[in-house]
Image (cartoon, rainbow, N blue to C red; front, side):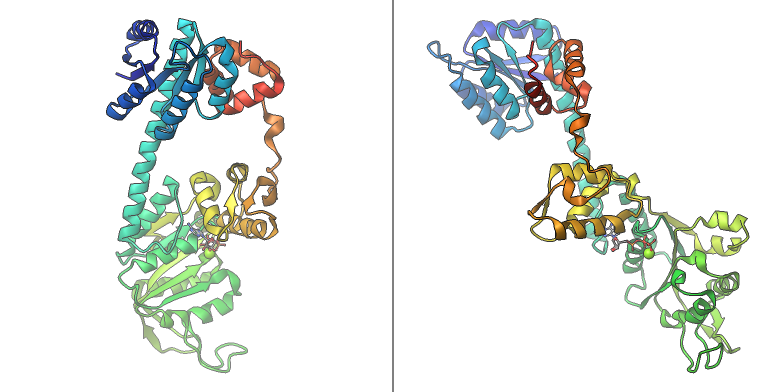
Length: 442
Ligand SMILES: Nc1ncnc2c1ncn2[C@@H]1O[C@H](COP(=O)(O)OP(=O)(O)OP(=O)(O)O)[C@@H](O)[C@H]1O
Ligand SMILES: [Mg+2]
């Protein structure tokens, strides 16, 4: 049963509230002085506080109430506090709401309004607690992963990415081919590094070949090596990447660019460990863990006849799919912070703009955007405008107008927390907006 603490020097107030709350299945605790109230908070779990603003019969300044609120808020920043005020102290109450109080109600209060406010705030803090709990769970899981495995400095916070990384660690030790798929710049190579670093052959060589950067004849020479004169322009015999990777890992990036002929040869090495250098018949034998990556749709290429189905099944015993950055919004801000140079910070509006952007170039685009912004920004704190993203326009135009706010307030029967929730704003933002538009509370 949720617990409400009423701090008021007038016992009649606490009694009236206690009766009201008992109808709503709430437990009420009471304290008549600020000190007694704080003592209860130290002693017992409380879900919500309702506090008076004056604790001496001869004062109406609200000074004691301000002090009490600040003390509670400092010690229990997440605890919602409703202020009970006299009409003469509305200004003070509004100030305190801006400073973090949950809401205020003027005495004598309206029972309905009080119940709705209490109900909403309890629901809100339950949701918040659930979120915090989930975050703590995620942090714990992430830390456990980082303790057990070498994550190659990968930064992630989104559950979608955590799953990919956990799977990469899990399959790393098994000697099976891994195919990493995902769009440009999403972090496929990062995942390949994680698989390699946690594999049984992590001490062996880690050789990479970008099949996208070379014409197909050269790819085969690169992969398998060539004897002098094997093709035009070769004057010296050279070892291929397979030989170089013997006893270790070969990372084949952009595997979709390999010619059908090259695919056939690759399949043979994967199945037998055997191959010949171009221009020779001398068979060589290697033991190599192959990790491949592509941003192409290999299944589509199979249908089109440009990728061998048997090779595909050989390569993708395990497929690790790295989702586009836009599908793991939880990673955006942590990655952005990671890419910021020491001493630079992100303003809240910059974080919002980063989360709203679609990132077609994924992590690489994010990294470039931040380097550029950090270079051009004139202050240590980067604002949305410094990022130069298309969606970085200031959101002032999106703010609700007078009619929308008044309608929401009417529906919420004046309960700010509820109107704010409906408008998708924080209470503080709603108060600021109301003040700006000159909308009165009642
Ligand atoms: N989770 C991450 N944590 C830290 N850095 C990352 C992460 N993911 C990607 N990066 C960095 O972002 C850049 C792009 O990542 P990566 O090269 O792994 O992408 P990719 O999917 O291989 O791209 P492409 O398709 O262009 O080959 C690299 O500099 C990489 O180090
Ligand atoms: Mg890559």
